[in-house]
Image (cartoon, rainbow, N blue to C red):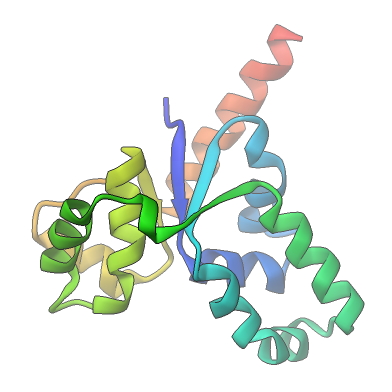
Length: 156
């Protein structure tokens, strides 16, 4: 069973655009099943693009803030200084010729021993081509989410 998920900023971006999508539902209801993580700078990255998100989703300032807080409350944001440098070195070596900006997400994935949930096809393909397997697609996670949700209901 999947337990720890590192959420890439493009996933949060997608959830903010459509809270009723598969991604939005996993982000909002998933914390009952999974432990979500992200590097600290994900907040500033999302807020930097807030105008674009509001425009694309037709959200007011208040709606954006409410949706952002709803999604982020289920994600444990990790300060990068807590993560051992060896995870960053390993991650940078993996990401440097794919996209060095994704080093933090891979480092957090390694640190928590989780799965990286990304919609970035270039990153996903590039990492897999190097033998890195700690990646999960939205479809894989959604199937696990449905299965785990049904199991949880049966236990209640």
